[in-house]
Amino acid sequence: MSGIELIFKENAEIIDKHLKKYLSNGKSKLYEAMRYSVFAGGKRFRPILLVESAKACKGKLDYIYPAACAIEMIHVFTLIHDDLPAMDDSDLRRGKPTCHKVFGEEIAILAGDALNTLAFDVLAKYLPSNKSAKIAAILSEASIKVVEGQIMDLGAEGKETSFARLKAIHMNKTSALIEASVKIGAMLSGAGEEKIKLLASYGRYLGLAFQIADDILDIVSSEKVLGKPAGADQKAKKSTYPGILGLEKAKKEAKKQVGLAVSKLKGFGKNADKLKLIAEFAVGRIK
View (cartoon, rainbow, N blue to C red):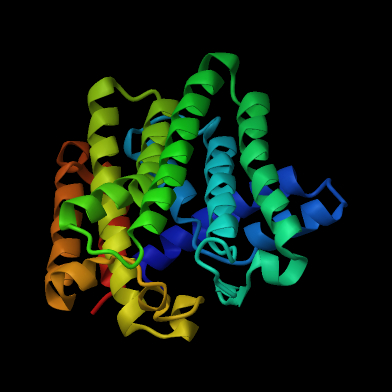
């Protein structure tokens, strides 16, 4: 097993253990749908970034896992809603039928709503009062940016879009939650303002690299590998980086963004080695 696979596996096991604690009590159809979507797979990319950012700052991990679970709940909420017929209209997510295909649109919408709310419930209950409000503010701001990014993305479908406009879309839709993940991890670890700013920049660049790689994979990969329909972007007439830059230039842009992300980790020394590996993974998915 490679280094990056170990990072994902070991962290995901701990995060899943905590997620089960927060999601196991509800016996209703709502909770069944929530659990279905949360435990449908995935690498736990964002919560792992939160944990590894805290470790890079050599901080305590006392309140890291409730915050990591809140990040994942918000992420899954966005996925459930993105997959709806009114949005991206996707039948597959993480290799399984999407929430609305299994439970119906009404339950899927409400499951997403409930995960959004539960995330902030977890922060309020399991973080100390002198930390929960600030962390909740960062997460809510990022969540709103994700929604704004989705609106911008929908508005750009079938239209000619500039590189600058596409970048603005994904600074919200993708980068905002990734940036919030690393920022929250640093803050909970007790890091100083300078380290928090550096990690926030790392998250922004990494988010763009991750999105560019996703756009490329939608073209060059298969449904089996992606865990969702391939070619969906082209079918929906979405604005993408390969569509604007061409495939090879898009690959170069993804690598450029990863290089910028990694450059923000220089002051952390070996403590940030895992964050570097995660950044390299973002573009390592494309050939």
